[in-house]
Length: 67
Image 1 (tube, rainbow, N blue to C red):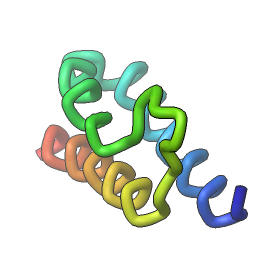
Image 2 (image 1 turned 180 degrees about the vertical axis):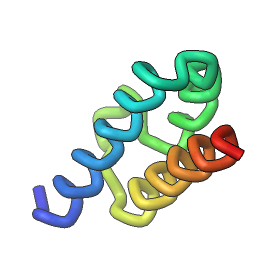
Image 3 (image 1 turned 30 degrees about the horizontal axis):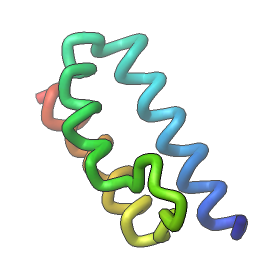
């Protein structure tokens, strides 16, 4: 896996953990957001653009809630 994808995945994991630990009321939105990622398909690949979009969705969710 490319280094950039790994970095994005690490950031997604960190953001997800932040939501779970600091904003548990937002967890219900995680399942809805994950629709952007491939799930269980044999031919599924992790597209860098989709990963970035999902990461940005998580960031917006947190930032919007803080306001």
